[in-house]
Amino acid sequence: MSASVPRLVIAAPSSGSGKTTVATGLMAAFAARGLAVSPHKVGPDYIDPGYHALATGRVGRNLDAYLCGPELVGPLFLHGAQGCDIAVVEGVMGLYDGAAGEGELASTAHVAKLLGAPVVLVVDASSQSRSVAALVHGFASWDPEVRVGGVILNKVASDRHEELLREALEQAGVPVLGVLRRVPQVDTPSRHLGLVPVAERHAAAVEAVAAMGAQVSDGCDLGALEALARAAGAVPGGSAPWTPASPAHHPTRSDEQRAPVVAIAAGPAFTFSYAEHTELLTAAGADVVPFDPLRDEELPEGTAGLVIGGGFPEVYASELSANEPLRKAVAALAESGAPVAAECAGLLYLCRELDGLAMCGVLDAGARMSERLTLGYRDAVAIGDSVLAAAGTRMRGHEFHRTVVEPGSGAEPAWGVRGPRPRVEGFVQRGVHASYLHTHWASEPGVARRFVERCRTS
Image 1 (cartoon, one colour):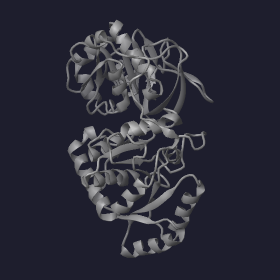
Image 2 (cartoon, one colour):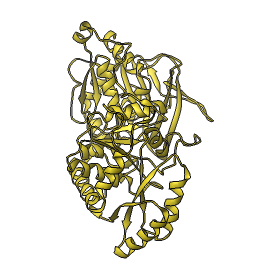
Image 3 (cartoon, one colour):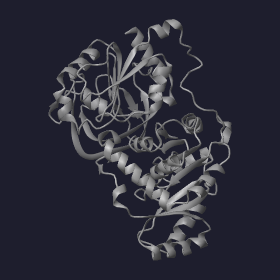
Image 4 (tube, one colour):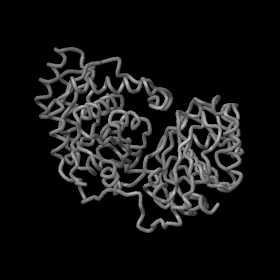
């Protein structure tokens, strides 16, 4: 695939400006024009990519320079964009907001520079007129390596308001590529951790994405946006697409005949998963089978290993608790010593209880909802050997939850978290590795290979 795939980064001065509406709508509008669109999201967000997938018909993928390292941003982008005509990358927070205390690392601006992609700035113009020029000029000139190729004005009140904004922006030298009015039907409901995932409101989400696409198509110059994307040139650094296959592992016919079944929790309660995890497990020789803990009373036939990612078990605690046959099956699998990898929501599901409701009881710990939001990147090191990593393996992760697990770690913790307030976190027992940390396995492909090998031998 050519490394010069047309691409745009959709950014904003701050959160709440309308990035998701514009990015998702632009993806849908380009797709409606017959283009194959590759959707991407800067940062660790799991929810927005679900809306991107509805808009494009392709898996939404994340580009996180903290979790995966700057060197993987280009290759992961090219991997996701294979076979596409154009790529749209939705930014995170404000354009220059990155990992706390790490400068530009993992910011939208950082990723845009790593991709050599032009930036389209989405500006909430609802409370300003001429001042918009100073705002845009500041963002466009702050870092000369970031190319702001145009502005989309959001929440414009009237024709007169639009006229004032356009007059002001002529002085800033940044073209206006779109003007959007406030349209209630494109709103998407939120709760304690952001937007409600697509899996929980599929029909309504389809309607919302269609409305976003119509609004962007009506209010934006799609031809100019496409032309800007096509002027991006080659991705810097001569990057080749990332691949889940490791040159160090060549599955034999024997491997293929003994492909272990790795069950992955899915459905409305467990929606947080990176597409690359499934690809890495499959490349390592596993037969990956999804199941829904809300509805399925048994694990997939022949399950040799279990992966339970993030999501919202607290929202579905009653239904998860009511599915006693599956809870017992998960507990029995863990008791057998089979590999079980659980992140955040998966950790809660393995506890004795969640908000007083019985869970799987694999871990001697209780979980409850909390008013406090725990959020941020983490630099972690494996305390001991586990089904995922050898002792001393360093990985970067992300925490994002409003729950508390007591105790916060077991006799054998999963991770030692480095930083100003070092601590241990998570649980390792038998074949179980459970933690609050979300990690991206592309940064350490040996994790998936190690897990699958343990599935074969346990």
